Structures are given as structure tokens and as C-alpha cells.
Length: 135
Image (cartoon, rainbow, N blue to C red; front, side):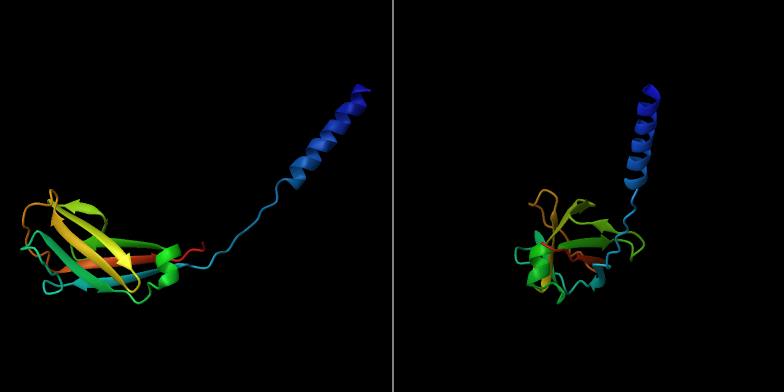
């Protein structure tokens, strides 16, 4: 009786092991897009005497669907594209942040304590990464 029970258990274990090892492969389409930009000293604007500087990037790829369901990441490079820092970021005492809307991204630079004046951020390499997603 023990022998029959042992054989039955081994067979059952073998069947479970053989059927539970099903490999499923999912192939997803690339749902990201990277867009490079370069800001210049004339693209940064201030309305408060230099406490906040803002530049607007025109990004036609940000439509209503992506704005609502996707992901939008922004990176700045302070060394002409050799390295990138993701926003929001504080770099050399300047706080960089961004907000996005349909068709555009606004990048803002201000002193980390938001009270001091700062100089125009000038020429900056910007990388925008758009990630499409389903709701």
C-alpha cells in the first residue's frame, strides 16, 4: 500500500512540475520617445527680477492622451550632454523643476530657498522622455 501511494505521489509531483513550467514570452512595442532640446539664454524669461526663470519647450507629441495616461520625464545636462540629471533637481544652489501640459513643458529655475535672485541659466541641453501607457 505504501509503495502504491509513493508511486502515485511521485507521478502527481511529476505532472505538476511538468505542467507548471510554461514559459510565456511577452513582446511589447517600444512605447517611449526621447526628444533632445537646447535652451539658450534668450529662451529663459523672468517676471520677478531674476528670482524665477522659466523656459517653455514646444512638445507637439504631448497630446491629451499622453498628458493624462503617459509619463513625461525631463533631464538636464550641465556638461553639454555627457551626463544628465533628472528633474526635479537642485544643482549648484539652483532648484530646477518642470510641469507639462498639452503641447508643452515649462522648466523653472530658482534659488533653492526661492528668495534669492539667480542669473539666467543660459544654454542648457535638455532631454525629454515620453512614455506612452494604457489607462
